[in-house]
Image 1 (cartoon, rainbow, N blue to C red):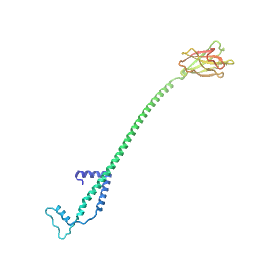
Image 2: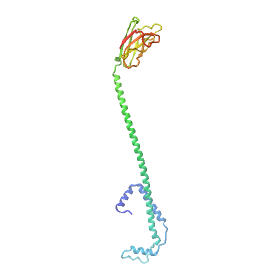
Image 3: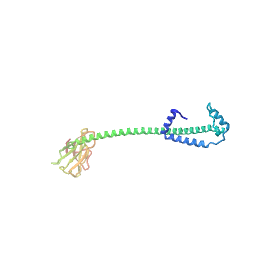
Image 4: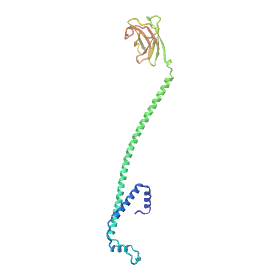
Amino acid sequence: MLEGDELIAFQGTLKQDPSLQALVQELTEASNLLAKALPRYPVSPALHDTILRQVAPPDPIPEPAGAPRKRISSAGAKGIPWALAALLAIFCGFLSLGKSRSEVQVARLNKDNGSLQLRLAGLDSERNRLEARVAALENERNDLTTRGASVEGRDALKEVQTVPLAPQPGAPAGSEVTVLWEQRKQAGVLELSKLPPPPAEKSYQLWAITTGSPQPVNVGVLASTGPRATFRAPRTTSPVAALAISLEPLGGSPTPTTMLYLGRM
């Protein structure tokens, strides 16, 4: 029933829309089946004359003599509008069904779009978190690189200090004790090759004297065997200013009773 521009627009859309093509095909088949399913009724002779009088031109053309007249029954004429109405109803039903399907699809697409938006927001948040983590790791790497360069550029031998412990009154004659001391680590090595073994029931004990306290801090009892002994000063708030060795009862004392060797850092 379309005309003019509407018909042209519809035909252009029909060529490009497969779903519309399928719908038109279904409607065409349905209309064909509907036309074939209509009952046949005898046509009233008066109906034919009435229709001709309404549609005939002012000067009717006479029919050839002996030509048979085609007659349409009144019942058949009445059935035509009902058939058109049924066809229109079917067409409207298909349109309504297509519209309902489209609305369902649009609703589903809107729901999917909402889910995708939430997913994208979550991914953006995760990306920001990962970027912050990467930035933190970059800072840590730069810090480690700087510290590594500082360590590589430092001469470890220059940080080791050789400190001789001077013999005090009562020290064995000819004895010597030397300390290789590393201030940064607060640790050192005692050179004991020229220190004679302690008397029986006695022990050598090492002490650290800090700048913050006049009372020596116990470092430990020296083993009676071995030319060298490693040690580490106790953790204190003040740096070590001097090291001392005393001769104590076997097992050591809480405070020094003698002072055989003393060396300032």
